[in-house]
Length: 489
Image (cartoon, rainbow, N blue to C red; front, side, top):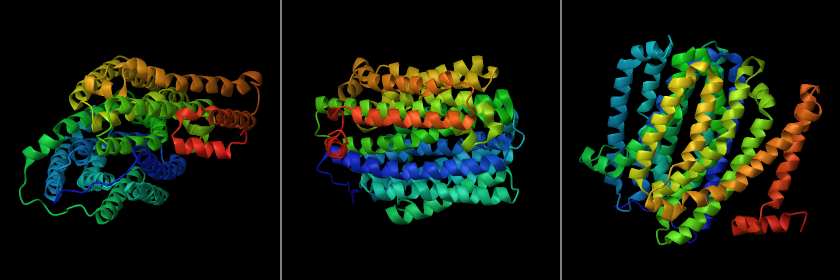
């Protein structure tokens, strides 16, 4: 029987509700994770985090591969049935088993290549977590296909709490780096079991195991997501190889903070994919208007977050990591400056997954990985600030890659996209300038006074921006709510 799709009478309402639920789940997970980082950063060393930052890259790798193999066809294929989904799941299990065996054998060599003596044992333990990933990926995909976004979001903070509580408990018992690894395994096991029961995915192997059929449905998505993973993780590999575990640990903490801040925006990617598959009757002109309007808003929101991180970089590092992590401050500010570009790319890719050219995305990702690896090869040895500069420049540079004909029709040309992003970037620059003024006016102020003034200035500026956003930029329901609540009406 063909897998059912959720029903929605309004594209805008579906995106708003689905995104709100997924954002809620991601925000809750981010809060839990950042709270856990604040504790773990004081119990463990930068070297511990460096080893885990390199080893744990196999988890987003597996998610990226399965996102292409399972999630993309589950969202795009109208005729997919239970047997087809079971086939995708077990092809995914086979792929993850092969990846686990390969990593198990390659672990000693990778430890030498990446300048990390403990990496081999850590990699081998994490390999067991790979086998759970196909069931997690298929559960999330099926729930989103059915528009059950709330249930998909529910396990985000649950997974975060399982990781954090397990890791902190083991760190207090002096398990060191193993507290982080076993925390990851516990999180994966709880998520796989809970989501599997809620979603009702087929657990048993299919009657006919068809690798060719799975590749036909998800091959392009798999290759595209593999390249996206490479572009997101090659920086940490270079940091470990050229700067050692401690250098990778410092850099990974800066990158991880900005990644956590990006998490709420990732909800848009999932709902946008499903929304535009479910609303295929929408013509290209209407789709482009909706896309560019949404792009304007997400870049504005990301720029406001980015500006806050840049202005409050010192208290953020002091609060989340502690005084021994001072080397993270400048890389954090540099990476935060590229957050609007990362969010814009994530948002636009959601449309490509739903209606655009997967082949064009594949070619673009090949170019991005090549350019990023070349830049890191030249400058990674200069330190984590140089790595952050290369990565931030590449994130911004991806906005200037020309889209394919289908993508331009659905999401606008480069000029239209840049025009939609301009208000957000201008607002972010203005907020940074205003937020830095207290330090320029009163350079000798005590840290707590300086930080408090910066927070107050940021809060006042943000309130002004929220009130000043034109109502025509906002979805109708939000514009009406703001009009009723605004103290200026």
